[in-house]
Image 1: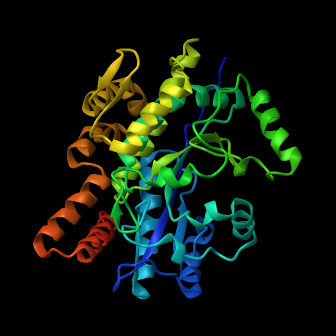
Image 2: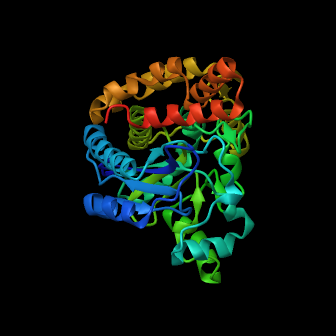
Length: 376
């Protein structure tokens, strides 16, 4: 009998801190971080770059618990930053900041990372969103890791929030992945036949001294090195709290759906990584606007049709996990548009109004600040 996982949730978000006058990136003073730690304790920490802050929820039984915890985290960061003339934004790239003007956080962990990754690390002016789903059984976790990648492009497309880089529209919905994929041990996860095979493969690299442990493996989906979870890492960070929760609920439900198949001695069809990578690129390039390849039908399918099928596919799981409202919100997310689309709309409207590119980019930052605070 395959034990039923808890399907608990943990959500990690990385934020950029901006100056309220210039809208450019800012370095939070030590006093700001100390205030946040007094309230949030270990749930807040600096990130690789000095202009970043990372938060992580507690282990949450369900989406309602995750909402309350993440709302508390966001509210504290926003309130504390405002005391210092700063504000957080939850976007994977800043609209106009320059990576070569940023500095990394002076901690042993980040000093080592900068040394090992050299010039690649310097460009890491990006933020992501990670969703942990509690799956204690190792074999179940590795089996679901083989099946879940089919859905990673769907999640990436929904989350896309990084169209701009150094003040230029990249033409991509998620430029963040372009930067992140330069790191080693990234991208779609390889397929392992068992937990033992996964451990042996990781240990080969650890034994060489190249990495200390599996936390230095940054696949789009991985078994967490610290927790009994399967961790989705593909998503851009979402400016709006409710978008984060919808994506987290969808991730949780897909994993439960795959577990249901496993219990029936069935499985989701596993496609070659070459094919899944093509959809990954389409999500990175277009977000939700141009659809993905339906490999079963042998053609492109509009994203609204894909989402309609997905909502039906995981309806039973949303009911069981108490996140029906969040999953049913997926079509509304498409109607509103991704963060990448909304950022471009703000930029175009402001540019048409006063024909000032820098003012238009600052207006994008303002919109991201406003979205961060929605519902807090």
